[in-house]
Length: 362
Image (cartoon, rainbow, N blue to C red; front, side):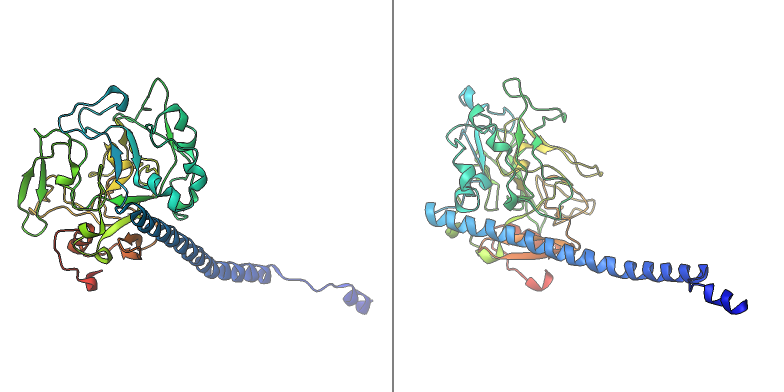
């Protein structure tokens, strides 16, 4: 009777053994998950770097074709603030149509051949013939690590409401990449010669009033600005030492490959004491700082490199751990850490200030 009973027993785990196995599996998953996530981020980082490399190469090809780099954005040129009604000139910034930005200009030299065929670049961005195509999502302008979305966004006015053009809103295709305006910014009140603009020396903190007369190039010291026509010969600091493009994740604010719409504003997706909405030029451009005599409580110029905690819509911002990518003027791509020397960042952002780059600070 005892022997039959023993044969009837089936081997099985005790409750303690089952709990031990579950605990071991949990530990293994805990060990493997960070490795899997790291591998995925490495792939995303490589994809982002390749995108920026394609942007850099496209800009080189553009220069070969036109003997200049594309404008930061194209705007009706004026020195007195007057313009035909069709270009919808902003009375404060003097931004106007057609508005097409640097990325739209690069489409024929990148992956946007099919898109460019459906755009009328001789008409303003908001023209009815362009409204469907300007909402196109282009993978080459999207970073896989950006978490703020890659769908088209609605253009907003200064209050954060939809900017209405001819009674309807406007959607723009998103970009996670921006062009460098240099150290100084020339947007906001960058139209009227009466206001002028302040240029700050990053080493001495001395400021100089610069008359604009509608020409953003009077203050911009980077390669891309309103109606810029930068050539290789203008980059006196060297193309390998000058930042042309970089990242700006949609987790911070909306950027577009399309261009600048007069009267639009860029709004931060989250708030900090230093950030807030800014003028339409920040849909495509950023700057390194300082700008307009910006000084901290010690009297030093405010410089905001990649991921600087001002989190302003006019700075570069990446969601890669530890830093973000920039494309230099020679087409090369560098990864800049969050701990980059502030003066080095400012020096790399200008193209003709004569600084000597110390790469050991990178």
